[in-house]
Length: 254
Image (cartoon, rainbow, N blue to C red; front, side, top):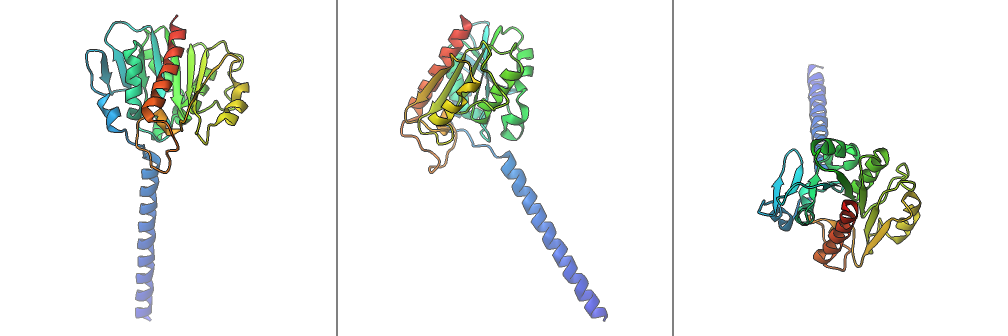
């Protein structure tokens, strides 16, 4: 009888230990999945070095500050979901070299939708900037549109990269320059989706389609080969994306 009881206790102990191991493993996997961010490629990391044109700082935000003088127009950029903010550094640096302050905030678990109001603190901090354009890639673009909809007096222009506004962010009646940039081969944000979402945007919104472009070439970060659908080199796509964003910034500045 005693041996049976001892054997039963040992079995219960083993089951509990097994369950604990499974629970710890599941929690570890969940944390790893939730906090994962696609890492930047070397080209993006190289753009983090300060030089005579742009001063780069990493805290409390990723900031690209032109050295030529006081900037009156700035760009706040919300990263795409589960993408390291540094993965956009080469593009942000190019925009800063054109004379615009650029600020890229980090987001909770790398998802801008969990802090769409991040721009508010940035605008308050850089009080000398008179005009602000907000932009974002993928879910970052959706979050940027949400912030713009909720804070129309704080934003002077909006650039949406490979994304579209949420139905709750109706910007159609706002007197605001907006640019939507999307890839021709983006399976999630294609021409039919763009056309469907036009009712949420001002009538004079600028639409820029990147020939042969896909969803992930809007940044310079690690992408699995099977995910990349583009037929146009990343550098060519990014040149068009940056220029489209600069055109908007120039519009806001004058």
